[in-house]
Length: 365
Image (cartoon, rainbow, N blue to C red; front, side):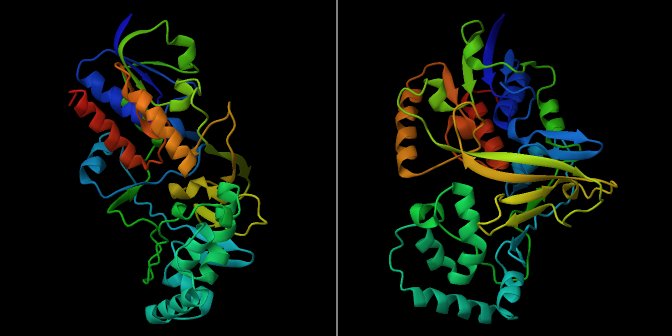
């Protein structure tokens, strides 16, 4: 069969594009190597609890048009992301705010917190940070760095902070208000029914083939255009080199209690705890089930054959990606999109915006 578009990847980017292309009267086929749609935003219903199979996904945006667009496919609850952090036997609010500073230093006012942070920074005498450790110390001082940044970052990247480039932490948001809302965006929430239901609606009426790898079918599908959301280096058989990613592994467990940790997201910031955080999924939906489901997250190096999560945007990888990008720009009928195709970390609203921009470029909307 002849298609206008072959969309490789049934995640948000590919699904938004496929939806708009189909609405414009284009014949589309969507493939995905996983056995399910929705990519990393896939949610699985387990006895009424929507389990975020690939980590917590909280939708947030300040773009009213994107908010209105996503609300065409689902109604959202009023969940506000207010994670907490545990360092040894101490518990702190995130993001770093007056609740954090009050607990850490026993102070009450913004002026007191600012004075402590400024004094700690000045004592370090760091001029131009040469690594992530120095960058974080210069931004937040020693106490915040040692308790809430150092161990978590080392686990996340699998390297000592002094061995990581400074630009990874361009800023550390310090809020001198008693506000635990992690995001400043105007619109925020979790979709009733989960993210999988959103993608199901986007792909309604469109041919979808799951558990299907692009390499296995690329010569058997006749399509005028290919929208490729997989790894750009894999598309070119890694001929210029392998881009690095971080891998996240999940240990999910069902517990016979109705409330395990009292919050959806709890970060563990000390280096001696092997996982980075625990997600308790029912709290995203204010669940009242008599049981609960938690997922411990472990970060590690990505290897071929495993699922990549987020790019390692250091100088080496960004330079390599630019070389692949030049190859991509020479393609007549292939367009690369999404976090893997563009080797870029994307929030969900930015993924949708980028997909809609491509739709405009393709004269679909």
